[in-house]
Amino acid sequence: MTRTCTSIRRLIGFTLVELLVVIGIIALLIAVLLPTLARARGAAQQVACASNMRQWGFAVQMYVNENKGFLPPFMSDGSGTYGTMWDSAIAKYLGMKVIDLSLTPTQQYNAWVENFYKPMRRCPTDPETYISANYGAYYQPANSTWAKFRAPFNYAVMPGYKWTQMRVTKIRGSSKLILFGEGYRFIYSYAVWAPDMDTDGDGIKDTNSGVNSGGAAPWYNFNGGHPKVHSGRSNVVMVDGHVENLHYKIWINPNNGLWIPQ
Image (cartoon, rainbow, N blue to C red; front, top):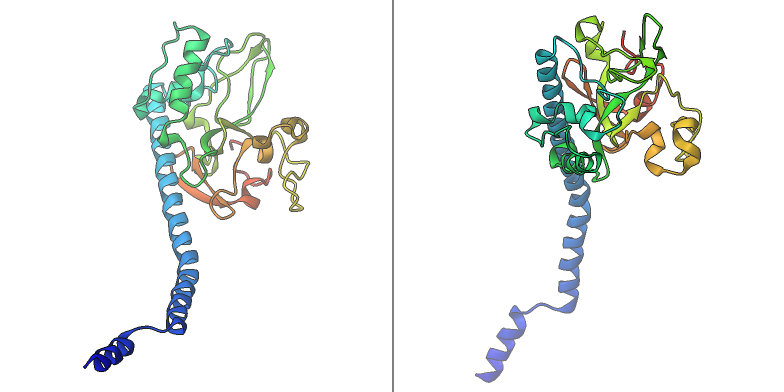
């Protein structure tokens, strides 16, 4: 009887070879499924990022509606305080902290930092990527009768110079002008600071040497933008509020018509 039980136990067990085969099959399945899961996760993060960007686009539209059709200024005066920055101007439409301009510069900065690190401004794919403004202007002396616009965000007031906010109704092709992109704080317009150096060694000029300041700051790559965060592509918000996903080769082309108002 004892022998029979022992034989049965041996029959229902697994040999080492069988276990290794099962483990090998499981490992193979994981290797096959992981890239698919990674792609699905990346696609979900891109959608989440685009949703955040769309909210910022809506906020700008609300600002425009309440300010006679004018886009927010890059900075509302020449003080340099963070409460006068473009992102502070639309903070209330995003449920963020409204910065009191009577606060000290340090207090304004601390309030701005709190807004800056809100999840709505960050890209889920890359924690170092933020929704950033397309900035760049060609200014004229204060006695000039005009100022030439080079990007949606310009200074409204600057001591010694004449800057003018841009009116949406004056922009032809607002669906083709980048308002926001993925970067850090703001992005130096490629139409103003055209790429003349290759910072990542892929053979494509991607950064303006003047902006890059000798390569001292890595976030200056791509003129402050991060156009490769979504598998070599990036989300952008156009002035009319819609979101597009651009390949970085299109993003960094200064002649693509996306960086200068028409």
